[in-house]
Amino acid sequence: MVRQEKHPKAAERRRRARVNLWGATEAEFEQHKASHRRLLAIRTKIDPSLVKALLLTPQEHEHLSRFSAWYEALCSGRIAPLTEFQRHFVEVYYGREAPHDDHERLWLRWREAFVNDAAEQVETLEV
Image 1 (cartoon, rainbow, N blue to C red):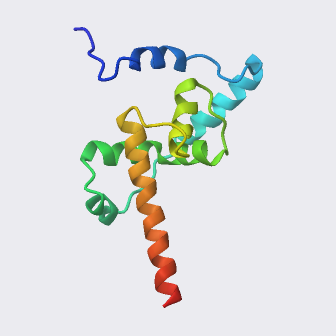
Image 2: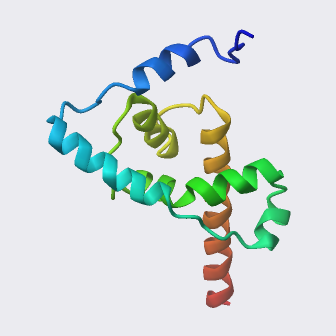
């Protein structure tokens, strides 16, 4: 069965995602990959009330529990993007590029919920 792409450039992005983005030596690249693997091994427990509030599907809930620690580290700069796909993910997070896939849209939705929640808490403290 041939995989149908939702976006015409998706296959090309996936192919380029395997390329070492920033020209590191092989040893440096392997060290950074190890940092990524450690973060990908972390499972985040997500509060069921957030799952309900954001109307997350079971698949989205599972995805966030598997990848949120890694996404957070990638977007905060604690780890460097190793691929073009990861670089694009960070650019989307900072609003410099439009999201192309469900992963990017889900992470934006998730982070927006925290920003709005933090703003509500600040307003509550000021009252």
